[in-house]
Image 1 (cartoon, rainbow, N blue to C red):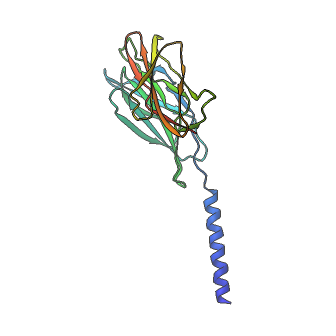
Image 2: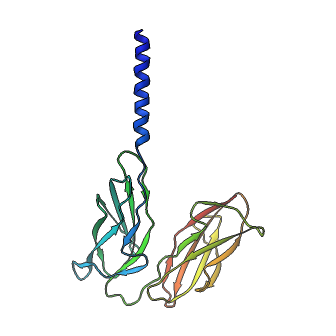
Image 3: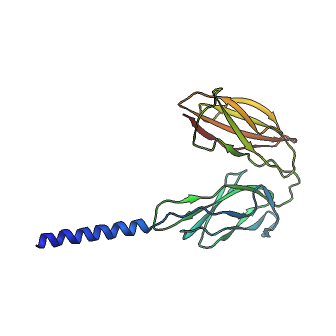
Length: 228
Protein backbone atom coordinates (compact mmCIF):
# COMPACT_ATOMS: atom_id res chain seq x y z
CA UNK A 1 0.00 0.00 0.00
CA UNK A 2 2.77 2.39 0.94
CA UNK A 3 4.56 1.68 -2.33
CA UNK A 4 1.36 2.42 -4.24
CA UNK A 5 0.99 5.79 -2.45
CA UNK A 6 4.57 6.71 -3.28
CA UNK A 7 3.98 5.95 -6.96
CA UNK A 8 0.81 8.11 -6.96
CA UNK A 9 2.65 11.03 -5.30
CA UNK A 10 5.49 10.82 -7.84
CA UNK A 11 3.00 10.86 -10.69
CA UNK A 12 1.28 13.94 -9.26
CA UNK A 13 4.59 15.76 -8.87
CA UNK A 14 5.59 14.86 -12.42
CA UNK A 15 2.29 16.03 -13.90
CA UNK A 16 2.37 19.26 -11.89
CA UNK A 17 5.96 19.93 -12.97
CA UNK A 18 5.08 19.38 -16.63
CA UNK A 19 2.13 21.72 -16.35
CA UNK A 20 4.31 24.46 -14.88
CA UNK A 21 6.85 24.09 -17.66
CA UNK A 22 4.19 24.13 -20.35
CA UNK A 23 2.79 27.46 -19.11
CA UNK A 24 6.08 29.26 -19.62
CA UNK A 25 5.95 31.10 -22.94
CA UNK A 26 8.81 32.45 -25.00
CA UNK A 27 9.18 36.23 -25.36
CA UNK A 28 7.97 37.81 -28.55
CA UNK A 29 9.75 40.16 -30.96
CA UNK A 30 9.44 43.91 -30.42
CA UNK A 31 8.64 46.38 -33.18
CA UNK A 32 11.19 49.20 -33.37
CA UNK A 33 9.88 52.78 -33.44
CA UNK A 34 12.66 55.38 -33.09
CA UNK A 35 15.22 56.32 -34.36
CA UNK A 36 13.55 55.46 -37.64
CA UNK A 37 15.11 53.06 -40.12
CA UNK A 38 17.66 54.63 -42.50
CA UNK A 39 17.15 58.13 -41.15
CA UNK A 40 19.01 61.00 -39.50
CA UNK A 41 18.17 61.35 -35.81
CA UNK A 42 17.94 65.06 -34.99
CA UNK A 43 16.33 64.83 -31.54
CA UNK A 44 19.41 63.96 -29.47
CA UNK A 45 20.06 66.09 -26.38
CA UNK A 46 23.49 67.73 -26.49
CA UNK A 47 26.07 66.43 -24.03
CA UNK A 48 29.08 68.08 -25.65
CA UNK A 49 30.30 69.20 -29.07
CA UNK A 50 31.08 65.57 -29.86
CA UNK A 51 28.13 63.64 -28.42
CA UNK A 52 24.41 63.73 -27.65
CA UNK A 53 22.00 61.51 -25.75
CA UNK A 54 19.54 59.67 -27.99
CA UNK A 55 16.34 58.05 -26.75
CA UNK A 56 15.32 54.75 -28.36
CA UNK A 57 11.71 53.55 -28.34
CA UNK A 58 9.95 50.33 -29.31
CA UNK A 59 6.63 48.56 -28.73
CA UNK A 60 6.20 46.35 -25.70
CA UNK A 61 6.21 42.64 -26.56
CA UNK A 62 4.11 39.85 -25.05
CA UNK A 63 5.70 37.42 -22.57
CA UNK A 64 8.66 39.76 -22.10
CA UNK A 65 10.10 41.00 -18.81
CA UNK A 66 13.15 42.93 -19.94
CA UNK A 67 14.51 44.43 -23.14
CA UNK A 68 18.19 44.57 -24.05
CA UNK A 69 18.99 47.52 -26.32
CA UNK A 70 22.15 47.00 -28.38
CA UNK A 71 23.65 49.92 -30.36
CA UNK A 72 26.74 49.65 -32.58
CA UNK A 73 28.88 52.45 -34.00
CA UNK A 74 29.42 51.28 -37.59
CA UNK A 75 32.71 53.14 -38.04
CA UNK A 76 34.41 51.99 -34.85
CA UNK A 77 32.56 48.77 -34.08
CA UNK A 78 31.96 50.00 -30.52
CA UNK A 79 28.90 48.34 -28.96
CA UNK A 80 26.76 49.78 -26.16
CA UNK A 81 24.06 47.80 -24.36
CA UNK A 82 21.48 48.72 -21.76
CA UNK A 83 18.66 46.69 -20.18
CA UNK A 84 15.21 48.21 -19.67
CA UNK A 85 11.90 46.96 -18.31
CA UNK A 86 9.99 49.58 -20.30
CA UNK A 87 9.66 50.45 -23.99
CA UNK A 88 12.47 53.01 -24.09
CA UNK A 89 16.07 53.65 -23.10
CA UNK A 90 18.68 56.29 -23.88
CA UNK A 91 22.40 56.22 -24.61
CA UNK A 92 25.11 58.81 -25.31
CA UNK A 93 26.26 58.63 -28.95
CA UNK A 94 28.91 60.34 -31.05
CA UNK A 95 27.53 63.03 -33.33
CA UNK A 96 27.65 62.60 -37.09
CA UNK A 97 28.23 58.85 -36.92
CA UNK A 98 26.25 55.94 -38.37
CA UNK A 99 24.77 53.42 -35.94
CA UNK A 100 22.80 50.19 -36.00
CA UNK A 101 20.40 49.10 -33.27
CA UNK A 102 18.12 46.27 -32.25
CA UNK A 103 16.29 45.08 -29.14
CA UNK A 104 16.45 41.60 -27.63
CA UNK A 105 13.40 40.35 -25.65
CA UNK A 106 13.97 38.31 -22.49
CA UNK A 107 11.84 36.29 -20.09
CA UNK A 108 13.35 34.77 -16.93
CA UNK A 109 11.14 31.68 -17.18
CA UNK A 110 12.72 30.51 -20.43
CA UNK A 111 16.24 30.53 -21.83
CA UNK A 112 15.16 31.52 -25.33
CA UNK A 113 15.57 35.15 -26.39
CA UNK A 114 14.43 36.81 -29.60
CA UNK A 115 15.79 39.83 -31.43
CA UNK A 116 14.05 42.52 -33.42
CA UNK A 117 15.02 43.73 -36.86
CA UNK A 118 18.27 45.69 -37.02
CA UNK A 119 17.86 49.34 -38.07
CA UNK A 120 20.46 51.89 -39.17
CA UNK A 121 20.55 55.65 -38.63
CA UNK A 122 22.87 58.64 -38.41
CA UNK A 123 23.11 60.67 -35.22
CA UNK A 124 22.89 64.30 -36.29
CA UNK A 125 26.08 66.34 -36.23
CA UNK A 126 28.18 68.57 -38.47
CA UNK A 127 28.30 66.00 -41.27
CA UNK A 128 27.05 67.36 -44.62
CA UNK A 129 27.48 64.20 -46.67
CA UNK A 130 26.54 60.67 -45.76
CA UNK A 131 27.75 57.22 -46.72
CA UNK A 132 24.96 54.87 -47.84
CA UNK A 133 23.24 52.67 -45.30
CA UNK A 134 24.10 48.95 -45.60
CA UNK A 135 21.85 47.13 -48.03
CA UNK A 136 18.87 45.26 -46.62
CA UNK A 137 18.85 41.70 -47.91
CA UNK A 138 15.43 40.69 -49.20
CA UNK A 139 16.04 37.14 -50.46
CA UNK A 140 17.26 34.60 -49.89
CA UNK A 141 17.10 35.43 -46.19
CA UNK A 142 20.12 34.43 -44.14
CA UNK A 143 20.35 30.66 -43.53
CA UNK A 144 17.43 29.98 -45.89
CA UNK A 145 17.02 26.69 -47.71
CA UNK A 146 16.03 27.40 -51.31
CA UNK A 147 15.31 25.60 -54.55
CA UNK A 148 16.98 26.52 -57.82
CA UNK A 149 14.79 27.35 -60.80
CA UNK A 150 14.55 25.51 -64.10
CA UNK A 151 17.72 27.28 -65.29
CA UNK A 152 19.70 26.19 -62.20
CA UNK A 153 19.63 29.75 -60.86
CA UNK A 154 18.63 31.58 -57.68
CA UNK A 155 17.71 35.25 -57.57
CA UNK A 156 19.49 37.49 -55.07
CA UNK A 157 17.59 40.66 -54.18
CA UNK A 158 18.10 43.61 -51.85
CA UNK A 159 17.12 47.22 -51.12
CA UNK A 160 19.27 50.18 -50.14
CA UNK A 161 18.96 53.75 -48.92
CA UNK A 162 21.13 56.87 -48.74
CA UNK A 163 20.29 60.14 -46.99
CA UNK A 164 21.92 62.01 -49.88
CA UNK A 165 19.90 59.97 -52.37
CA UNK A 166 23.01 59.52 -54.51
CA UNK A 167 23.53 55.75 -54.72
CA UNK A 168 25.62 55.07 -57.80
CA UNK A 169 25.61 51.27 -57.89
CA UNK A 170 26.22 47.95 -56.19
CA UNK A 171 28.92 45.30 -56.05
CA UNK A 172 27.68 41.72 -55.69
CA UNK A 173 30.02 39.24 -54.01
CA UNK A 174 29.10 35.56 -54.19
CA UNK A 175 30.96 32.29 -53.59
CA UNK A 176 31.00 28.93 -51.79
CA UNK A 177 33.61 30.30 -49.38
CA UNK A 178 33.32 32.80 -46.57
CA UNK A 179 33.99 35.64 -46.70
CA UNK A 180 32.82 35.81 -50.33
CA UNK A 181 35.67 37.51 -52.17
CA UNK A 182 34.47 36.89 -55.73
CA UNK A 183 33.04 40.07 -57.24
CA UNK A 184 30.59 38.52 -59.69
CA UNK A 185 28.64 41.58 -60.76
CA UNK A 186 28.68 45.38 -60.71
CA UNK A 187 25.27 46.91 -61.35
CA UNK A 188 23.75 50.38 -61.46
CA UNK A 189 21.52 51.88 -58.79
CA UNK A 190 18.40 50.89 -60.73
CA UNK A 191 19.23 47.18 -60.40
CA UNK A 192 18.50 45.54 -57.04
CA UNK A 193 18.47 41.86 -58.00
CA UNK A 194 20.63 39.44 -59.96
CA UNK A 195 20.41 35.76 -60.82
CA UNK A 196 23.30 33.44 -60.01
CA UNK A 197 24.07 29.89 -61.14
CA UNK A 198 23.95 27.35 -58.33
CA UNK A 199 24.33 23.64 -57.61
CA UNK A 200 22.07 21.48 -55.45
CA UNK A 201 23.15 20.51 -51.93
CA UNK A 202 25.58 23.44 -51.75
CA UNK A 203 25.94 26.33 -49.27
CA UNK A 204 26.62 29.78 -50.71
CA UNK A 205 27.76 33.06 -49.17
CA UNK A 206 27.05 36.53 -50.50
CA UNK A 207 27.04 40.22 -49.68
CA UNK A 208 26.19 43.56 -51.27
CA UNK A 209 28.42 46.65 -51.23
CA UNK A 210 26.58 49.92 -51.83
CA UNK A 211 28.53 52.75 -53.49
CA UNK A 212 27.42 56.39 -53.74
CA UNK A 213 28.49 59.07 -56.23
CA UNK A 214 31.24 60.31 -53.91
CA UNK A 215 32.77 56.85 -53.64
CA UNK A 216 31.50 56.14 -50.12
CA UNK A 217 30.77 52.46 -49.53
CA UNK A 218 28.77 50.33 -47.10
CA UNK A 219 28.85 46.57 -46.63
CA UNK A 220 25.72 44.48 -45.98
CA UNK A 221 27.64 41.86 -44.06
CA UNK A 222 27.71 38.19 -45.07
CA UNK A 223 24.53 36.22 -45.78
CA UNK A 224 24.26 32.52 -46.49
CA UNK A 225 21.79 30.07 -47.97
CA UNK A 226 21.69 26.42 -48.98
CA UNK A 227 20.40 25.12 -52.29
CA UNK A 228 18.36 21.95 -51.80
